[in-house]
Length: 249
Image 1 (tube, rainbow, N blue to C red):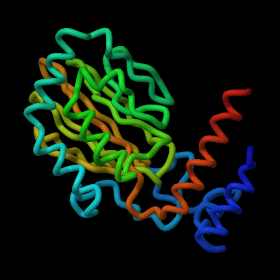
Image 2 (image 1 turned 90 degrees about the horizontal axis):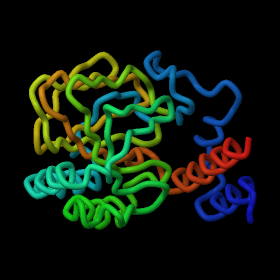
Image 3 (image 1 turned 135 degrees about the horizontal axis):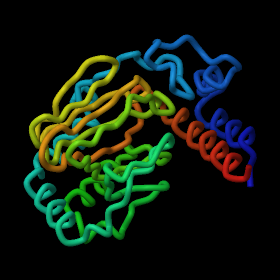
């Protein structure tokens, strides 16, 4: 098996000697200057816009995924409601890298670098969109996931930053009661049912459901559109190797 250095060398040979300059700068001791509200992130790739909120349709490829999800809202919501009612055991407590919450339930469509085929029968419409757009068009970050995220009434996700800025989080609002919101870098927004929000979760963020029924969004972890193909390959190699090392400790 090739080492990380050998895989990086192969990427440079294909894309050019400077193709991984930003990744190398990110990995350098001390990292790079960052926004104060990104202080909790592990890695900050230089040259990525320090902008917490993004227009979901500003990137054409991500816009295609947004259109596919929003046009199928009715079917996606109905299928999730049926799964929640009849197959609750298919849902699990969400395990964030910082915590595990039993009042934050998840049904995974994509995890560990592959589609979760066990969910295809439970949520066929959403599964099809993730497979045919997010995965087929290489939008999804294989280091992360896509899942239905259901916050129970009265639940709260504490303020935190995610690990890096080279992926970006799409929230598709599936079933949204009143009194639910998300705050990113100090700006609070509500979800509009059937629509998408897109934000950089390396910025500190938190969410709350003060409503009287569960709040469900479909979350999709996407490559940040300002990353290159060479960088995406190298970052996948890097993070996969780090995770292996941590698992062996």
